[in-house]
Length: 217
Length: 64
Image (cartoon, rainbow over all chains, first blue to last red; front, side, top):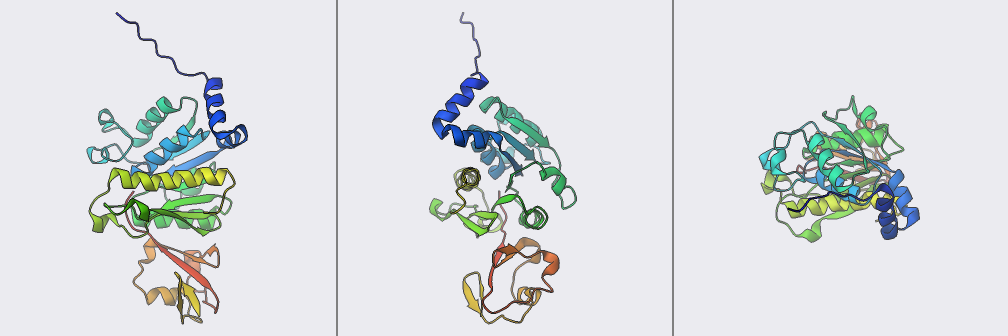
């Protein structure tokens, strides 16, 4: 019989591999960054996975919900995780992907009352909710009350529309918006993993570009 | 003229609240940017649109 020995890279090996890919200076910036992700569904779970792989040092993960069978077609959870809080499930999954990442989880609903406290440690905030009113609430909260932070939000990624209509816009100095702007899940009737991942990738990439000092689109 | 979402409109002199009331935007689903800054919701009623203003109304749709 084979003896299975599970080996993961040491922290030094991990950091060296990332520095070789991104450059040492940029990797230091990524490692020192804290990014909050509000909503851990199709957008948030994919944003988190991208940023963890890229070596972002700390993620603040916020969601009140549990993994449901209707999530598994597009969200970064496993069938065996059904019923778990998304915060706990994603923490487990990200820890396997990026073992040295610092993860802070909050199993709560973000509100106008608790938002400032939950998000105070973040340099950049990703809006990854599915409900339009929650998206607008968080956008107002961050841009009005936290003027030193960047917000990367999303609107319009439902359905089977062209991949090429998903894009990133810079609405204001610290406010970026990803998506096609119009494809509402109510009218489109569905969310498709690939198109949601495209939008999540736009958001994750915008975060990394902001960290790299590349602010223009 | 006031540029709103890329379109030149004859809206100078109106408050932002008056302009929004004349549209089909759902106030609970929007964020408004004016000349590069976000306009707090509490200031829609006192924000008077001026000639040359550039306004962007972001109307969020559901899905994520």
